[in-house]
Amino acid sequence: MRLSLLILYFFTTTTLAETQPWPELPVLMHNAELYQVVAADAKLERLADDFRWAEGPVVEPQSGAVLFSDVPANTVYRWHEQQGLSVYLQPSGYTGLYPEDVPEQNLQEGANGLIFNAAAQLVLAQHGDRRLAVLLDNAGESPSYQTLVSHYQGKLLNSPNDVVQHSSGAYYFTDPPYGLKGGDDAAQKQQAVNGVYRLSAAGDLTLLVTELTRPNGLAFSPDEKWLYVANSDHKAAQWWRYPVHADGSLGVGTLFFDATEAAKTLRGLPDGLKVLPSGYILATGPGGVWVFTPDAQHLGTIQTGVAAANVALSPDQQFLYITATHYLLRIKLVR
Image (cartoon, rainbow, N blue to C red; front, side, top):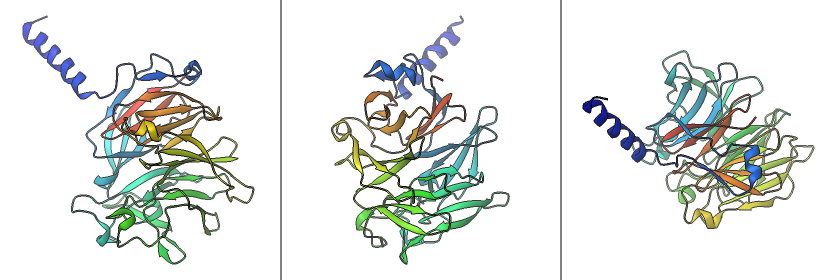
């Protein structure tokens, strides 16, 4: 190897080591059952980076591409295995409906959580516009959206954060105050609580959960009998579980797992989560992605080195996509 190439090699490898915040072998095992979900030698792939706060990944049903939000950049990106990274939506969640809510000039609070609904339409939890919306068209200079819901009892929502759809067609979503200047103390905050809501297929909005301080990510169990909800609060870094009744309402919630102690020393809080068909739960939390059994046993963590915000599964459950602060990552799962 020529000297110049040798110098370049060592410079490149050193730089990569310095800029990669996660360990070379990121899978931290607490119980060997973890290896039914992810292999001990599985590695994180960096697919894209240099984002301000990457969030809300979802996989396009037909192409397999990953859409994800960069919330403060008011942008949704698209990453494809062959085509690479491109801007998909801009603006993604703040279109100027409430300019008084913008915390600062370059922080526009775009979309956060994303899903494709049963009709294969992209549904966005839009922080800045304080609504759930569906993408109507992305062919023109600016995307056009249709509001699904923006008010509860005549008052604006806080800043919808994450959303899932039940097989009944109803949407369940969380509404913390992260998109408001001043959070709970914001002059623009109209809701008394940071709630979990249900928007029925007929368009009726019901407030289901009022006791969580910072409701965030949410996901159904495979049989839809349970709804898991993350609470992103340093003082109560927890996951909760609620029984889902036949009419779509929720029963009394129980604490699923408390990670408040871990949040004191590790980066990140309970945030987005997904549930495998087997029932294992993949939940972003302090230190990375926590893997749980359905009975709340913490099997281990996929360490990301930075705060992990949300996850998405490939259609075949072969890969887990992770948005972690500035990065879009991927790790292979055990099928």
